Length: 154
Image (cartoon, rainbow, N blue to C red; front, side):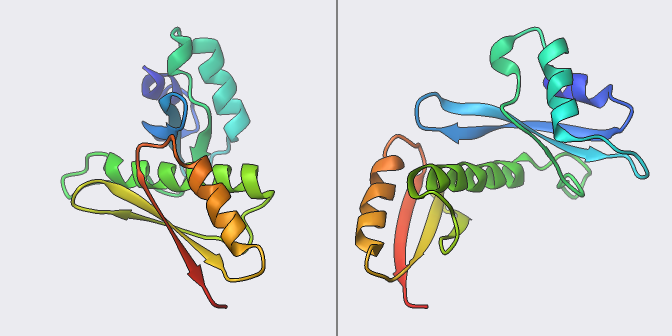
């Protein structure tokens, strides 16, 4: 439904919606959009379109991310697992920013493991590193992905 609404916009070449992890609701929809060559649209405009035209409020994306190219499989279908991993990284950066004030110095890596995906956080070693790690562990407790925190010497 959301993909159809976004695809009707004249600037949108292709749109895909996946779930972005959320500690309280499990997942919230996030839209990824590839624009047609030579056209312009911004995320706010596309989000506003969704708010007006998507009939189910819970389906309206929390964000619209404009990317260079939507990942495709070898047969040309949208490869949503890659978008889900990106959404996990985005969710992790939001949590880091909300609890630490900013993401600088924290490296975020998302890995697909055999069991399920994991987010790896690399924190620089410093006087408050242990406190930051404990705060982050608590902030990520409600998420349905594995979180690993690694302290690294710069």
